[in-house]
Amino acid sequence: MNRNVRRIAKGRTNFIENGLKIGLNIIALACSVMPSAGNASSAGGGSITQLQAPPNGAVIFVHSGTRTAPPACGAGYGTRWVIDASTLQGQSQLSVLLTAYSLHKSISIQGTGACDIWGDTETVQIILVHD
Image (tube, rainbow, N blue to C red; front, side):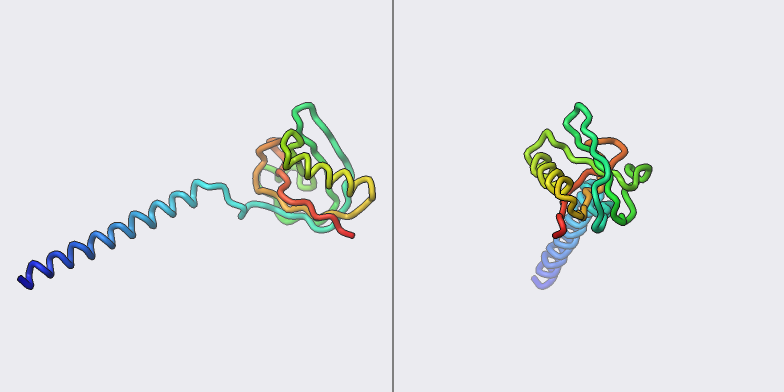
C-alpha cells in the first residue's frame, strides 16, 4: 500500500509542477504580447511651442522640455506629441493643454510608448501643468 501512496503522491507532485510550468509559460506569453509602458517616454517642464490640428481629430504639439528617449516609432520627432481629441479622454487632455498654452504655463508629459494616433508621434498619456 505504501507503494501506491507514493505513486499517487508523485503523480500529484508532477501534476502540480506541470501546472505551474504551464501557468508560468502563459504569463510569460501574455507579458510579451501586451503593450508595455517600458518604452514610454516623458518630458520635463517645458512650454508648448506649436499646435497642429489635422482633420482626423488628432492634435499634434511640440514641447520644449527635456525628454527621455522616445519609443522607436516617435524617434524622428523627439519633441512632438499627439492627443486624440475625438475621444473624451483626448478632449480632457486638449482642454488642459489649451489652458496651459493660453496661460503660458510650463507642462510635463508622460507618454504611452505607442504611436497609435499619428504613426511617427508618441501618444500622450498624462499632462501635468506646473504652477
